[in-house]
Image (cartoon, rainbow, N blue to C red; front, side, top):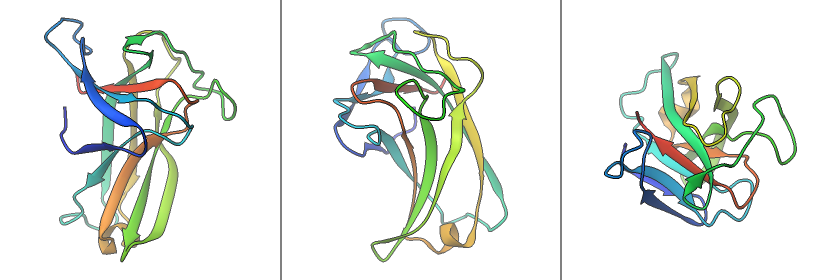
Length: 153
């Protein structure tokens, strides 16, 4: 799993089992989410980014009550408690947010409770990303109390 992940509020921890399903594998999990906008985030290295170039982000995601799967979402829901998380990117320059692109990354297809579901999307580098001090990819928009678990397999 990629290192360098942070949490917008609450915490992050490694829990077992990961998506391989064996006791010695781990996944990244949020902990103590108290609001819809809480979730994992990662700072992207923008040094080599070029305007107009497309990048893909993909992972496997499971929603969990506690450490285990079981929480559900509806990939077709745009509002309310059943909507699935989505991922966005924001840029910061000199401590000020300069841009934000919502909903670039989403759960793909129907959601299967307790399973590892694909979560992905593509973003195209713009001037704000190239000029930014920080480019942050973050996952949010899920009802409070449900943990977001990520794994790379």
